[in-house]
View 1 (spheres, rainbow, N blue to C red):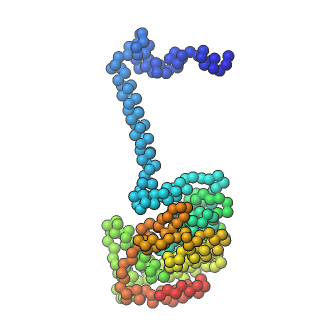
View 2: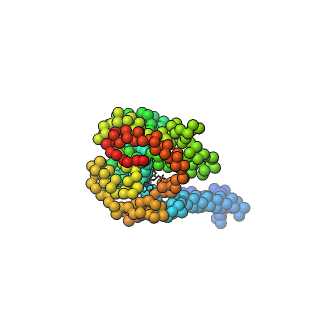
Length: 358
Ligand code: A3P
């Protein structure tokens, strides 16, 4: 007997399995609705149909919810400035895993400096086909996350092909004690990138960011001058926004652990006006083919900065990058310039490059 014959000879579903008739029999307590011996009244069937209706509605609602959830990120990005296409490409890139890829520990880290263009640099580098950048700031080496171990860190990295450079950026690494030693313990060949800008502008930018965040939360915040200068009219050297700008001090801790040749310093002011040239230097530092050119950038007059042109899409950094700075009392600015001058000279000497800051 063939399988098909056996199927034809099999007893009908009603008789052999608890199908529709079986269920009805269970509910009706007998031969089923409309069958001889059945004791099924409308009143007995009503709860069953009610239950089926409830389950049906529940499943439909769940399906609608998950569909809305899937649409939300793209819709939100579109509302925030029309970069929906790139937003969803980035999200897809995070989810899709191509054959032959793996998550790898970074071989290059942008260690700082906060408010000097670290985000712009990471996004620009990520245009290179041989670079895979981690999305957020992982803050592994400068926080309690270090206790989670390198495997935890590796899993925060994007998927990459063998030969691609995985890059992470967490600007707090630059100023946190113990981080250079931890990075060396992971891999003493890690390549380090530091982007710097005039420390006076950096301090104002730092203040502007914190000010905007506090205002958004309805919290009070004094003027930059009130933080930057103490009651005696001296520079307030304990103000964090000012301490970060003493670059040579922070850099020395890194140079005590890593050779200068393993570190590349980016001019953040040039990154703003001529991003392509700074990217060419980075490609050389990382031993990558020079593939990022001037036509990968276009100047957006509304934003006042260069934006990215890549993979047939164009986009700018978010509004949190390139904020308007408050006007600062010129005498306070002068005090800060005088304060930083000797430190800047030490920094130029350390890195072998004169940045000509005020
Ligand atoms: P401002 O907001 O003070 O202008 P970070 O990413 O490290 O927080 O640095 C933010 C700074 O990146 C911005 O500081 C801005 O000057 C600088 N930047 C450099 N290139 C930029 C770009 N193409 N778009 C926006 N900001 C850019």
